[in-house]
Image (cartoon, rainbow, N blue to C red; front, side, top):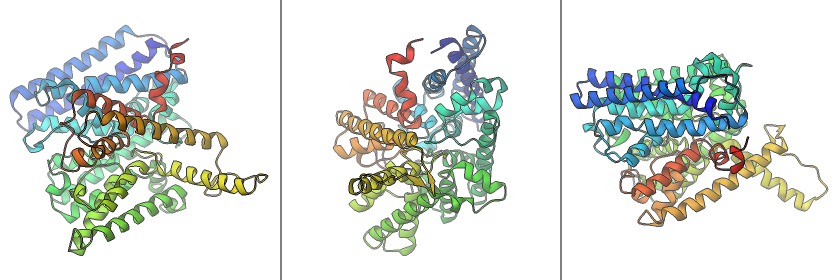
Length: 482
């Protein structure tokens, strides 16, 4: 790895984050937060920008990035963002434990939405807006944003784009990667603003509307209310958020095509059809399971089933109900959705529907080959054959996912009171969901987990958001050889 150009580009990321903290300091001042909070935000802004500038000046020189350097930029860039991004929490006194502050920041940047904070209504507005901003940057990727706004990064833009963007395939909307990054971020910002307007119409103030729009489109789940979306008790607000959560879980390349006047492109896409089918089936099963047993009202059962299945499948993590009290069948369905996730090319986490589809067809192919050893059978998605190297890569990803999940659950049993909490904490952090079951359920936080346990969960969040290989490659000795 070429350390100098790698950390030169990371310095730019730090300066971008520092400017964002400066905006949050302004929000803090506008909304009349205590002076020590405003001062803490300003100091955090200054420290992050100054650190970025010093690193920038010390690492100047020609930029020529290899694919390996792209992995290094993304991995170490996210680690630096998590550490420096924790300063607003620490310097304002909102979170005094540095590990918990980094946990909160990484949870926001990875759009996991797992929190250690309680009584959100009492927190300073500037800090709440910074939480929302971590989602905003993390959803589409702060490094991809740098590729979009800084032309000279086009030299190594594809390496960064491949390493940071989630999903088994990286759709290029235009031949130039910088233009693709601009289009993706443009669509992302447009949808955030649109949702905020609809939420404002529903009765939210502008502050809450933008914070929830950032959390929705990033499929993050940080709310400005302790009770999350349940605090509003509004069918209109829930409907708007369900729609945009579902849209955020859809491949942004499809949304780009739809905005260009091809709205039926969604239904022509096999992954979207699978996404819609799994979502509808899970919602229906949950509804049938909780109707009358948990909710005597038909409307209440439909609201709960639709909102929570959408929130969990898209890995957003907003809550309107304490689903930890639901029957075992519904909880198992939600747990399965935490593994599946939404579509490739979206801001959601977990395994994703494209991989699930390929894996299922690979299993069917192996069964057919067992019966007909001489047959030539290809894995096809939407009638098009999937290259063997892609099938192999997806199979490997699935194995890595299960191995990390198993080891992670074993580790977390040392830091949690029961197996359900251990298992769901790993599932929820690796999949970017946020709330799990048991001690980390819908009405709980991760504050009860010890600092060492939180360190492991931070690692799982980074692994899940950067889809394992980007992080694991850095741990190999061969990565550091020139």
